[in-house]
Image (cartoon, rainbow, N blue to C red; front, side):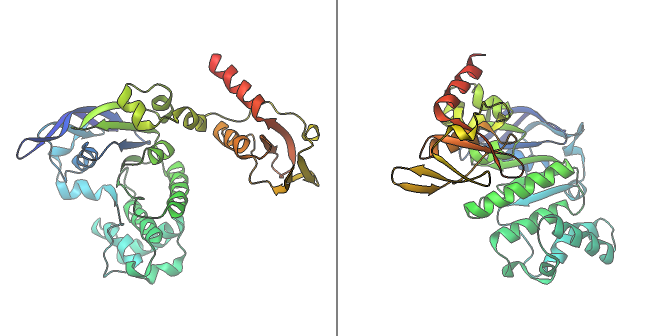
Length: 337
């Protein structure tokens, strides 16, 4: 657990970056710090590994005040991922990842063997091991950065806008990969981002900071979307927060009717192929399963040319449809209950 106890950071000249910040980042969970530029989120993150010292207050890891620990030893036990990966340009990918394990006493062979396994774990084939950072794409460099942060198997990881320097498609891929890794590893992670969508997607908990380093609200993504603390939080999470909150609700109980009840749906071997519309047949852009979220169902119903979302089973066979007006009735019933 990472604990901020009434932490204040005032820079020379009187600028307050962090103002009496108190919060607990739970063990084994990912907490995302988000807010407008100048709200103190990166300063707060860097106080965890003593890259920035607080003016007053305490930062603790598992009950131990970080100010009483040797800086070098503290940082070796904390994974750190930054924007643009921050790799050593003169070292190969493999040696970049092996750096910290060797500092911690592993032999070169042991460190390299473990690093090869980590590269595969973050989705990089072993042939990348001998390349240099300049020979990698931005997304590949970020994967190496994550692997390097994991190399010493640290219980705590800090991530400072790690995915902001890559394009949206690569960012989505990295999000998926990282969520898979975190599910397997269960690290205590503090991450900074300026993107509320990224915070909601990745965070088990989200801390929204306002200008001057004041904590506006701390909670799960759904808590922030369903019950924003004030107008600032409501504005920051977006006017479409009702739709976003559906990402946390299962589609398992959405009422469907048999696909045969729709003359607009074309099936082939039980699989949905196209919509039959007045302007001609149109390919179906997507389907949902019981494991998906209500947001996906809502998006499919809205984007469909006939206002219908199609549910399929594990074999891709259509087992029901839901019309947009029935979906609206279902959502209104849930809201009233």
